[in-house]
Image 1 (cartoon, rainbow, N blue to C red):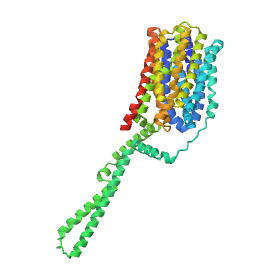
Image 2 (image 1 turned 90 degrees about the vertical axis):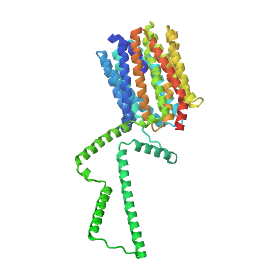
Image 3 (image 1 turned 30 degrees about the vertical axis):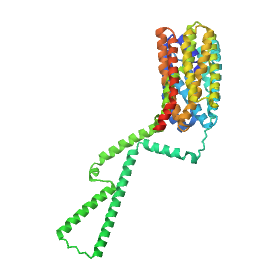
Length: 488
């Protein structure tokens, strides 16, 4: 459905007589909400409720979003119906589907993602023509109601998502499990109390060993003295009292140390209870944060490199299809011709995803090299937007941009599994969705501002082209990052 947003963009602009920056801000807020909600959807939703229920909820949210858009009296309502409800719809459905797909397949996971993206390609190929026809026959409001009904098809799709549990080989994964357990213990918020308890227990053992050793040495000394038949002079009564008092004092100190209590602590029970309650609250908050998100991912240099690249190239690979229709409208193209441009873009995106995923699945070239090359060429194509002034040139531009930009979506999930592993894929998808959302929010806002100030979308395509080139070049530093991690 995102591929048809450019068509709705033109209709919203005509209905509300608003500027491009306002509608771009709607898209920006949508991506921000989608980014933030992805952490909770992957950390809490799929963990406690499962992928099936999240997709079913997406069907209901999608219906509500389109009905709200249909009856919105002013563009400010779109910030709730489009930006909020549709963001929750897309994230609940898409992330849940990608997560359960990674669990279903192992050897041919790349091809499985390609086949799944085939549905998105078919939808992008058919829906623009369908939406254009519905606009001409029923108008904007009725079209939105029909699109809301189409979202209800997510309900039976969610019912088909059967959860499975993968069997792990204990002999091969025991070291990884042990390392994961140690990392969790280090990150646990109550590690300080555990460390303190271990120190107290070690102190008790040392004290007991010292007392036992002293008793043994006294016993041996007495035995030695008896064998030597050495008689000590009797002590006076005053000396015996002093020794007795010293012994009792040391005994009290020993008991105090072994029990871990002191008169100072007993004299301030309220302060101790307050500090314990504060530590418990902090511990619960940290446990909640660690439950919904795995912060240890940021220790992985390759993951940080991939997310930095994604921050730059995600918007350049996502939103051009939303700005090609208004860009073509500025070139005085008719509505049916604009629909053909979106269709060409969707078809080439479908072909490009299959081509690149086929190359990656057969290991002809390394995946990060393939994405780097595709992103650099994609950036060069975006810089050529200034020469697109006719239908033919815009059609060629749409085909090349979509075919190269689709590489990001066909390879990003595979690279995540390759860099961080399948066990951390849910958290990796959440971080990737957040970086993508930040990228789209910032870039789409800047494109709207540039359009209002310059009167053209060419500046926006320049921005996306430069980001795509820089983001693709960053991936070429992956061998250096891997080498530094191995050295450390």
